[in-house]
Length: 335
Image 1 (cartoon, helix red, strand yellow):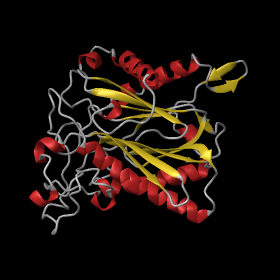
Image 2 (spheres, helix red, strand yellow):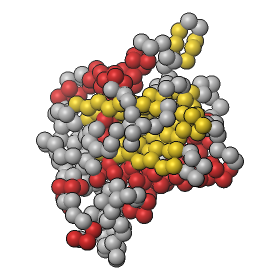
Image 3 (cartoon, one colour):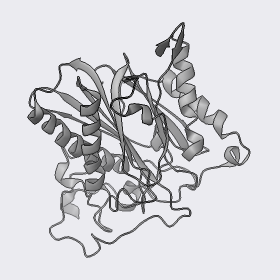
């Protein structure tokens, strides 16, 4: 993905800690909304995104690892914005509006001494600042940013990116840090649950198996305690949206999690989706155009989730294999 109109994205990670941060920086304050469907969210300033609240636009959105400790990454992003005189004007002051959410990666095999030594806040604040400094055109999927230490039920997770263009030219991109409690494949096969939405063999081109495996509907979840996980996502569109319409897109996009992960939205997942409108083009022309945007949000997020797992990379002390390590880069006709 070479770029997205009006939006820059930055990643930063600590390889030893096996955790990281992703920051979304709109060129101008952007209308944003959020919807939480998981039972165990860790978040900051999400209430202000409700329709009807005073502040309509955000200066950044931050996704991080580290559970509640990782929310300090938004402080780093806010410091970066303050230095550039960005934020909501309150008299002579500027207050950066930086909502954020964190996923639980505290039991993923990384060296967690900084957390035990109560240094996590400063580490994540520094990662938030570094992610802002690194912000540029959206990169490829993989073990980066907020997905650096992510895992799923039986495979390593990661950070996924997918894009769609609607019939009227509207662009939409989905970004997902996939640390799900559940499984993203159909049973123990290499086939992804999101296969019906795949484009251009972006996660292997395996499609749906000729017959569904007997364990396709089995509930397989992480065995580590505590059972805390989360899929975090942001849907970006280049059209203009009201806060209410942005929230509707965020709500609809949660279907993408359910289409790509089973089980999803559990009591142990903090599944959270943000929607951001960079307003490089006009608003959707009526309810049917908004319907198309909502459907595209779900389908594109399902693809981003599969890509996150498909492109995850192995590293020292991993507790779970990557998709590639388990299944190899086999062609569909070799399966």
